[in-house]
Image (cartoon, rainbow, N blue to C red; front, side, top):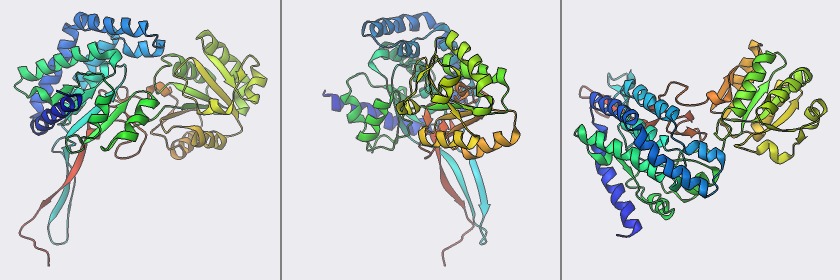
Length: 418
């Protein structure tokens, strides 16, 4: 069987299983997800053995430390993934929910009901926990899913999918509701992206190169974000201790992820008091600073920031720093250089906070919290299928409801069109 035929076969099986997924009772979906969470905990050592093989091979290939971090199934990651599945299981079932109903002058009632999207293709790199998260979210929303993980996590992904299929089978549900492409050949992605009659939506997760490749080659609608150039603006009315804490956490807690801080904006009136303290704390965390002239005049150990630095998603312990004249200047900088991902303001000024919330149009806009808080799990979505910066049909971290659409339903009493 050729590679194209393999992909077509899996897509066909998943498409056929989607009809069953769409009508699964809430109780069955909840039971499957709770049992899968239990299996992840029970089979943790076996999963980590497979994961260790992936990590070892990735290190041999010279993959970056940030990517190794994403790849590793630590005890913490497995527990968080299992807890996320349990949280998703407890959510109300979105399928069949009537979100609005209104009555027309002729007495006819018109409404909108949530329905699954159908078959969702997830193309992702490194993070094997995405395998569990994506499968769970798709199932809860009544969808079937085709997973295509990166070669660096193939053993880990297969181990998790095997547990998923085992749980589905034990509950009398078609195993093809969740499928993993058995090959890591990149051409398989190209074949997958042509199957618009079998797959309803593609969600790529990974580096900018992968996402642009998918967007350029897909005949299927794609929800995406290319990169996360996230900003934190320290307002003139900021609490300095809070501002330092949020800056360090946003940048250094996990620098290789898309919601990590990449550019720090500081109001000129507070820069002389804030930047030396922040630079010391960031330096202690191993962060390299690249500043504008105004920032370097205060902390002269900073390297010179170039125009490219304002556009950069470093995914590393590097931070661009700019002193701005006003909140309007900060908002303008974000509008020019941002990627519509996540921006945060640190301030005690209510009016400044409200202005920032209203005028910054990124998918997550935060007041007095770290950019790292921009996450489906943290937001209470259980997990996220991805983050959309495309505004259609979803914007920001995507949870269960974002994997549905709505259809019109009409309740009549014999009305006809005159």
